[in-house]
Image (cartoon, rainbow, N blue to C red; front, side, top):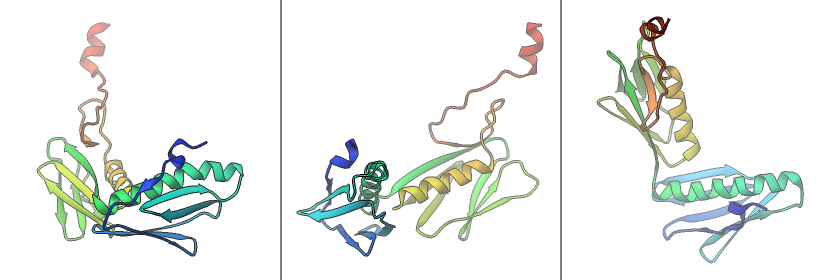
Length: 181
């Protein structure tokens, strides 16, 4: 039994949820999101609530039930208040800047790294903090992970790109290791 699947999803005023031909569409002030539905799961909309249930009594349906409930909940939340991720660029000479529809990262390579900003996502750079916002939670998280993957924080000096609030475990350098011997 899915704990999240059992809970009905409240649809706020000004948000429209519809299911048609194997696709769920959520419209709100923040945009429109669509997601393909799996035939093992069904969604019913009634009296300002969406209820996700199993269409079949199979192991796959049980596995997808809570997952699709979370997807629908995230879609409803995203079209009303956009999701946000913040990344921090740390290191001497490391910086990020916007150039048109691309994010330009100078992170210790011999060349700048250019990353195209996907449709539906906005990126903002202030000093050494990159703010990514968008209605689709999956897309925001994936874009943030792509940026972080260009230069992960290293354990000796902590240089690189990290999520805001992320703690990087530091290692001791050569001096501390040789002094102990």
